[in-house]
Image (cartoon, rainbow, N blue to C red; front, side, top):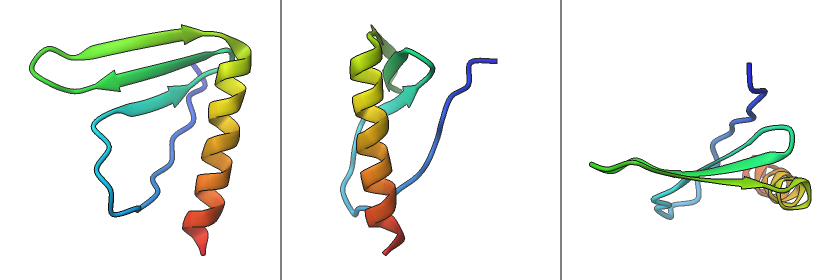
Length: 62
């Protein structure tokens, strides 16, 4: 429906947020008693997150 990409990289670090990308949007979410979602509607930012994920994914494969 939205075309999200998901992956998990084991880093040993705790990240309290989840980051999802779709075509031109990035969603930052935190699951707490009162969940928060921040939507970034910017293709350049979304593409930058996607490139960051690709680098992290490659590092995680080593």
